[in-house]
Amino acid sequence: MSARAIGVSFDETGFTVHLDNGSALRVPLDWFPRLRAATSEQRRDVRISASDAGLHWDQLNEDIGIIGLLRDSDEQLIQARLKSVSRAVKIDLDDL
Image (tube, rainbow, N blue to C red; front, side, top):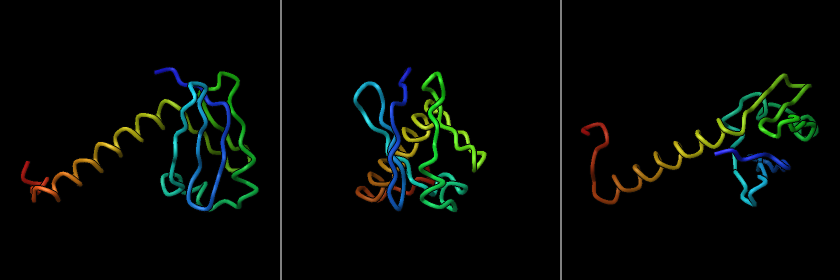
């Protein structure tokens, strides 16, 4: 997947990366301790890379790649679905 960032917005608990294909990726601040500890102003001071494939915060020395975010969010979604299914059918994931 070659999604490219076109914008970033923030709220109290996370940020959203707006992609050129019309989709948006919601990211919790808990995934990035530097961003979580930063002020709102520092978080908003984000630069999209020239290739549109990454985000960079000069003040925080933080770099985040879009492809990595997509991969991590897919993995988190899969884990959440597995936990939901295991609760519904009472399967202990550790037994698998």
